[in-house]
Image 1 (cartoon, rainbow, N blue to C red):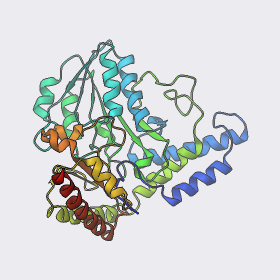
Image 2 (cartoon, rainbow, N blue to C red; image 1 turned 60 degrees about the vertical axis):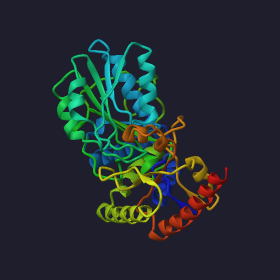
Image 3 (cartoon, helix red, strand yellow; image 1 turned 90 degrees about the vertical axis):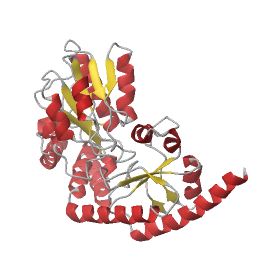
Length: 376
């Protein structure tokens, strides 16, 4: 098997899985219980939260545990708009956002909120002049992901934050799911940040919302205090502790991992550059993602052709319900390229041998499917 879909989800790190199993068996108490078993579970959660905060550069009190980035995104978007609707009804985002950003924004439009999409430059980054043009005294929230999940485009978060700070009533949120574990993250420019553990070799079903301590929002889930008042429910001790372990593992030997991914990215792009395809990813992208478009071959057809050889890529973000890549269309303005796009996502676990085998099979499938299209 050759796995090239790390942006969709990552395999669980064995140390992370062992931590999860050990904590599940050892810490059986409800962390909200007052007896010894509950206090032991609460203590290990507190220690894990301190580790997460230390790695990310925030306060322990700013870490809110969720079921993943989708819940975190919904929590901050709906929570801000519910709490501060008296400040304004204007939201700014981009066409590159995940569906867990765009769907709640569509919902809020039915409640009277106005959503604007900031223009992108030729590299897919936010047009800062257009952002300045869109910002006004009614702008309540700007939500822009740090790295797009389909193409891998990095956004200039620091520069964006400088513009937003000119409007003190406005909050800045970023979905940093595709940044955590891939690059060092600076939260100092953000009011809110969200991510999922499954993207950096953690376990599915847990994520975080980082919220600046002084900001109050309305919770998405009511029902009493958990680890914070912003997300009710029995704290998932083993998932929380395993997330701290996954984060530690992700940034262990980080320079070496980054160097290897950079090498693999160049190796892959050099190989793809000899083929009759379009390469959509550019130098402003994280090296973990290479997005391409095929000529006259349906992306889904190629995906299943590769799957027959146990090679796994994706057509677009795994949560998308659209038939085209909105991100590729936003970048290129070419609907044909957006319909025929494939995402190849790698990690430090990927090998050059895997890339060689992928290219070998990919060439065969391009020829076979191309000839099939011509005969039809």
